[in-house]
Image (cartoon, rainbow, N blue to C red; front, side, top):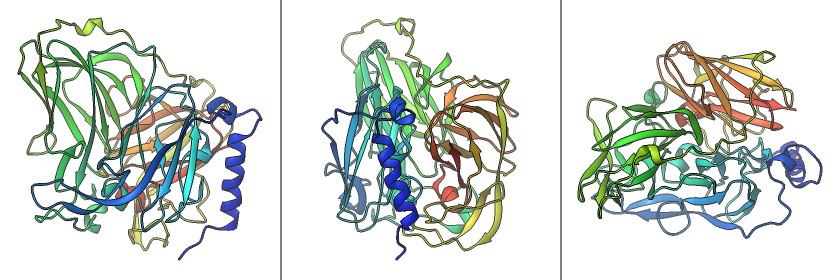
Length: 464
C-alpha cells in the first residue's frame, strides 16, 4: 500500500497552518475564520438505495444515512465548517467544486491535504466569498466514489439576491447498473479513450423523471448541477418560459432565454422559470442530446396563478472575482491531447490502469505522491490568459480549482464574457480564459470527464 510521503505530509501541515494563521494573504482574504461555527457532519459510508425498478442497489456510496448526499447551504461571506468522518473501506477526501477557498481546504490528496483513512476524519473550515450553485465530491478513487453516489449539491446564499416564489435544486447523474439493479463495471477502456463510459440509468436527485410542484404563474429558481462522471446534457424546457441567470455560480452578463443549452460534468446552471398560469399544467425539463431525447424532471403548476413576470426579477449580486488586466496578462499555452497508451502509476486513491490523455503532451493521472512539475507558475496578483486548445475529436469540460476565470474568446462560437470555473471546450476549439492569480497554492486543472482525468488529462497551476 502506498504511503503519504513525509514531504507531502509536511506540506499539507504547513498549508493548514497557513490557512488558519494570523498573517495577510489568501487566509485573510478567503476566510481565516476565528469564530469557528458548529461543523456539519459528513459521514462517508456505503449503503444501499432503490434507484431502478429492480432490487435495491448495494454498494452505493454517500454522505450521511439518508440516501442522496445532503444539499448543503451556507451564506456568502460567513464561516462554514464541516467534519468528514470516513466510514468507507478506502481513503477519501472532499473537494468543494467551484469555491475559491484556501488551498489547504481544497481536498486534493497529496497536493493539498493527506487522504483520510478509514476511521479517520478531517476538519474543513472556510468562508465562501461567492454566492451561487456549487457542489462537493471526493478527489480520491474518484471514478468509483463519484460513480457510486458521492456527489452533493452546495448552495451559497446571498441575502441581497432577488426573492423567488419557489426554488428547486436538481442533482443530475447517471448510474452504471445491470438489469438486476446492481453495479456493473464502472468503465470500459475503449470508451475511456474516447468520450467516456456512459451510465445505464439517468436520475435527478436519485430518482427517474421526478416531478416537483411550483406555484402557478410564479417565478421559480431552478438550480441544476451535472454531477455525472461522463454525461453531457443539451437541456431545453417544454411548457414554460425560462431565462438563464447564472452559469457555474456566477451571474451571466446578459440574461437570455433558454432555447437549449449544453452543459457537462462539473457545470451548473441557474434558471428563472415562469410557471404556467393553469393549475395542473406540466413543464418538462428535457435532455435532447443524442438520438433519444430523455425527460430529466417535471414541474407541475399548483394553486391560483400568481401572475408574475420574468421582468420582476432583479439582478443577482456580482461575485467579487477580480477583473483580469488583459493588457498586461501573460499567455499560458495549454493543449488537451491524447497520448500513447501506457500503464498508469499505482495510487492508493485508485488508478484505471491506463494513460490515454494528456495536457501539453504530459499525462498525469493525479493522486500520486510525487506529482509532475506544474503546468505553469503564476505570480500572486498577476493576470494570465490560459490559451486552451482542444485538437481532439471529443468535448472536454475543463475545470480549474481555487480560482475563477473570465471567458474572453472562442474560435468556435460567439460567447458572452462570463465568469466560470468549468468550461466545455468543443473539438477543434481554441479558447482564452483570463484569470487573476489571486489564491496561492497548487491548483488542479483537469477534464471533468473522470475517465479522462484519471487517465492523464490532469495537471496543476502553481501560484506563489
